[in-house]
Amino acid sequence: MADVEQVRVEPLKRILGWDDIERHVDDLASRLRTDYDAMLVITRGGMIPACLISERLNIRNIIVAAVKLYTGIDATLDQPVFLQFPSDDLLRGKSVLIVDDVWDSGRTAMSVRERVDAAGGRPEIAVLHFKPRASRYADQAPDYYAEMTDDWVVYPWDDIR
Image (cartoon, rainbow, N blue to C red; front, top):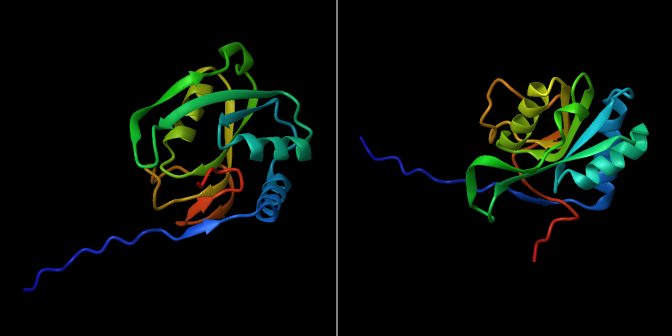
């Protein structure tokens, strides 16, 4: 029996423009509820999508979760580090829309969801892109996403120098 050589297939790199982002945000906003008590933005990737979604849904109570998972392009921490997170009082009993740009491994979004749950909030997650093959949570997914992909997505705000 011959040895089978394993070939690693790199994901396609897809560079998005602002028109793509507008289309994805419009799609998400059309499916989201309009009665959230707060929007919890995951920095940094979720900041621009959250701003655009908040404008479309007229959400003014915007709070921030500063989460660090990556230390470089290929260097991932074992656990997300919360650099900033809202107090439980801001989340307790509230319907909270968590916004990020992408659900890749899912670790960041799931960590934030767990913190909101623990504080007594009712979280829902919305992202522009969902990567189910990369997700570490086979039985979990964002509540809302604009597109499912395996591609390496480059957003207009990413520094690709």
